[in-house]
Image (cartoon, rainbow, N blue to C red):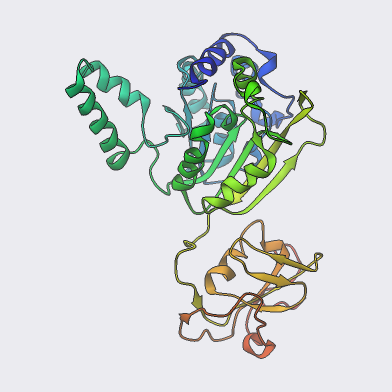
Length: 379
């Protein structure tokens, strides 16, 4: 399991006493901390505050939930009808989080938080269920080992711990870097799997400005200390874009490095992104939609190859039109819909094709929220 055992041991220590080296200084909303016991606050280790991205009614998944601090903060923000799911592999951290679950539920008025034992790179397999299975079906020979493998495959396929497209928001606080390098791609694919179309991610983690050499990666203290397993900052963006997320961006990027090791800067960032409403492989629909990129760049290009010169009415498919109405794009585009939508056909326009004003004249000009303009674009 690579560094996993060392990570588990170090965070087991962190569950029983404060370990300063496991975290960066972070300011949290003091109002959300009032109902949390001091023990949970003191045993929290992170590098950001992804709870600030939680919206009312969300189903939130916290990867590497530890003692439950961010989960219990998020639970106050999702409100009645929302849900928060924490996933962690460390027994002591899970015990700390679950210790106060009933008490916090009473303060909230309902029990909207659940904690699962699992690996964040394998969100389909519950380690609580694995423990139960092995207690009832010990692996003692090749036949029982094969039966165990078959059982795990069935669990992932038929009864996943976190179901496909079931989560509005995935958050994480300085945990993704602890996963072995060979599993990081699969972890990001798992995150994409569980997010609903239109859902979001807000990942706070540590990145390096250049590649970390193998001798640092082989140091268990540096790895479990959230240093040598860090993503390269450009790789962090690329990974989430490659699996299908859109609008992938550094919402936060600390100017001052958290640590400098062997002339490599390690700093805290928060990455945000959205899962598209439709698959990139889906045929795009032509119904006369257009958009105007507001600027200030002379021209921008999205992940699908669409090109948007500033101030020009560009023809887009229905799917792109809908996507550009979502965060983080909505404030950057004016969206133009025809007064009467024509029958849908396959969108075949090449990137950067201009949409003539007469095609959308009289229809809705959907502007960014808070612009002071109504749905027709009149101020």
